[in-house]
Image (cartoon, rainbow, N blue to C red; front, side, top):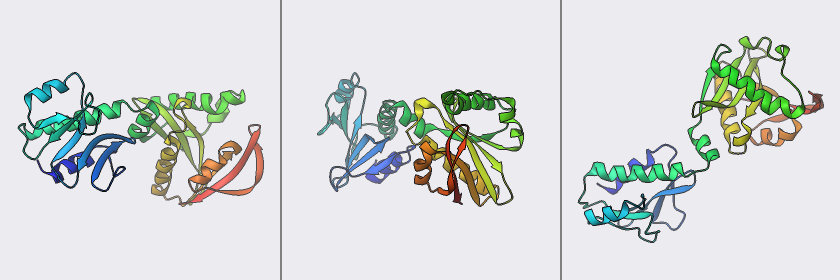
Length: 258
């Protein structure tokens, strides 16, 4: 295999990043900030890969193109000379796959959720809506000693419901409500408490804004709890008017032009 073929295969991995953290000639491929491959861009003939420690001795014994990891832990890494390898190209790619999967599986749950979360629209007849109501209660109501009522969800059949899903579970949620043909309101923004702080909320809002634009809206309004105003400002929202009380706590009205 060639250097270009190896690099292209690595970069096509979901969420793979090309970095040069050490010097100008060592290309380090990362996922979630962790290395899964290192390539020499000068010699263009070797790659360092992570591998299962119990199988490394077998690889070393069977293939002359594989050596103990150069400048890496010899227990967990190998160096593969891929330009004149005594193994099939498909097996080289499998070694890259294994390194990528090992590193990805070692990431913290928050990071894996951020990488693998998927977003979709659903209606109130969907099982996802039941999960959404529970998430709203747990995140938005229970901390205020409040319980969601039928009045709280009246008319939500007319809204756009957006969920973020990870491993089959709804972990993030928001609603888009129509104000007029140009303006929509995003409300009931909630992210699972165990996964907060990982950037999932930012991804959720980005998806919601794309949906709103696709429906013809040009401005988003929302009522932000005072405790999260700074976060909304960090993703482009601006305060309108004075602080006010809603559900017994301080809020600010905010907006963003799409």
